[in-house]
Length: 109
Image (cartoon, rainbow, N blue to C red):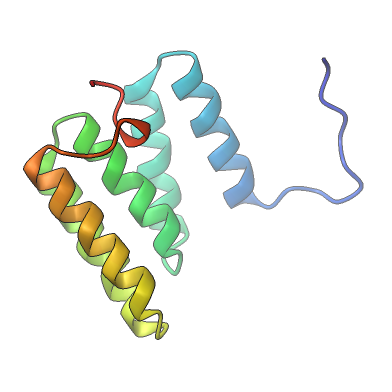
C-alpha cells in the first residue's frame, strides 16, 4: 500500500517522529535514538517528545540520559499545569529506573 500525501504539509516534528518510527521498525534503534534526541532539543516545549526520548534512552541502557529527559518532560508537564500527565511521566521514570517498563515500551523483554 502506497502512502498518498495529504492536503496539508507535515511540520518538522511530525516528519521527525515518522522517521523515528521508520528507523525503529527497521531495527535501527541507535539511529532512532539520535533522531529523537534531535527532535527533543528542537521541540523544546513538547513533553511528549521528551518522554519518547527518555523511553528510548532507557531501552538502550542510557539511564542518566533517560533520567534527565524524564525530568525535562515532568517539568514541562508541571509548567503547563498537567498534574496527571506529570504523575504518569514520573511513574514511567520510576519504572524505567527499576527496569520494569511494560513490554510496549521496551524491545528487550
